Amino acid sequence: MNPLFEMKDVSYHYPKTASGVRGISFRLFPGETIGVAGESGSGKSTLVKLALGLLPADEGSITLKDISILAAGRKEKLRFRRQTQAVLQHDVRSFIPVKNIIHTLLEPVHNFPERGRALTNGNDRQFAEEWMTRVGLEPDMLDRRPEALSGGQQQRVHIARALSINPSFLLLDEPTSNLDTVSQAAVLHLLQHETAHPERGVLCISHDLAVLHQLADRILVMKDGRIVDDFYKSETWNQNRHPYTKLLVQAGGWNGLEDQGKTV
Amino acid sequence: MKRTLSSRLYLLLFLFVFFILVLSWFWPVSSSAVSVPERLQGPSAAYWLGTDQLGRDVLARMLEGASYTIGFSLLAIVLSVLLGVPAGILAGMKGGWIDRLFTRIGDSFLAFPDFLLALLLSAVLGPGLFNVVIAVVLVKWIQYSYLVRGITREVTQGQAVLLSIINGSSTAAIIKAHVFPAIRSHVLVMSTTDVGKVMLLIASLSYIGLGAQPPSAEWGAMLNESRAYFTDSPRLLLIPGAAIAGTALLFHSAGDKWRDSFLKEETEAKEEKQRAANG
Image 1 (tube, rainbow over the protein chains, first blue to last red):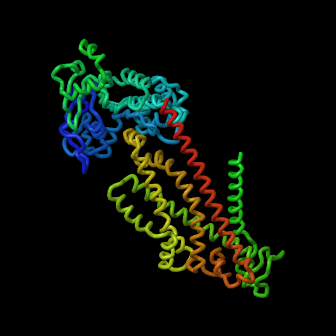
Image 2: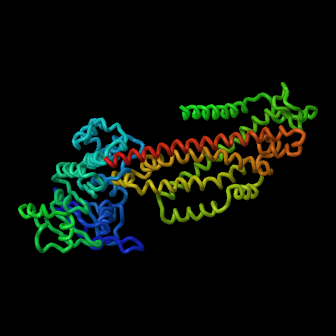
């Protein structure tokens, strides 16, 4: 099977600083979810921007199916955008301003009219309402301003927006951060049940190994801009894990879960 | 209650200014008809505000002057906005060398006080109201583009714009959906406040002979022409002087008031978001 998304020897470093990423390589297959763990400053955010085609890499290649993202022209880039979606860390200003929720929710459908029409059957409103219900929100919230929603509700709208266009590549960047504990659990639950699709690859970035453990099949650990560990979730507690991974497992306060993990 | 009352008052005042501008177009009495025997007369039934040193009707001249002084100020502001806003958006969105070049030019303009620079430019361009407008636009546009550049930078670095890019929005769509709503109220407030300032600038330049030329009845030029008659007919200076000060004050305080109400809305919106974020 061909990989859906691939990074090969990708390096990028910010001008005038030592930060960035070096020699990143991994393959994401359809139906798979890869988690990337690491603390702040480990290069996670750079990886996100590179994967979304928002930064040019210094070296290496990044491909989605047949599209080489680094060499893509305008048309190719748009073809990449049409298949790519992201849910980012909760931020109070992540919606289209002075417009109701529905405008943000339907943005991808409007921006990619051909794909959009096929999905909505010409009834945008009903389509939006169905997605609101699917992510556990009241359909009449569509006519409210984003300020009127709680952080968890806002994240749900973003999940609906990202999934509504049925992307082949979905990137989750700290999707549960900055939320209260109850919302975190609810959003995580939603992601667990809604993101999987046999033709979709999901890349989930988080500092929280526990979150990745729930969402991902395979976990990469980043430190100082490099991937230092790469394992399937069942191997999390192997003795030969990288010392840094062990540290992250301990830091997550996971001692209670350790026994469960061994039995998985 | 108090707020709506003063809003209505401002609306009335603006309607009054607008009414005067319209009136000046249709006023039947000529502003340039000289009648030396009737010179320097006080207010009467025939001449409501009296006559000037050449026997011209002061009311007709004041009305004509309104269309010059206010009209050209508005023109200068509109041109400054049309020039400054796109430049600010461009610099704010593109960054890099475009932004650096832009800020270099901007800083060199901002290094001088408005009046000094406008004085210099209109002296170079030569006397005339249109040249004064050009000078004012050259001074003012950079202030709008700095304002817009700052807001654009802040907005485009935010997550909302990032998500719109990921969702395939074009640059034009991002400007329309994210940048315009953010700059709209700021530009409106600044331009309203500026009408007063620009009026003073144009009137000052006309007063020292660089702006409107005789027999144009621009208010600043009227002040200049009447200087010699100050002791005998102080009315000739007081009327245009009061008109300049009053109109400038009106626009300035209206801009201030808008600023206050926008700021209030913004803080309320922020508090609302904060509450939402906290649960």
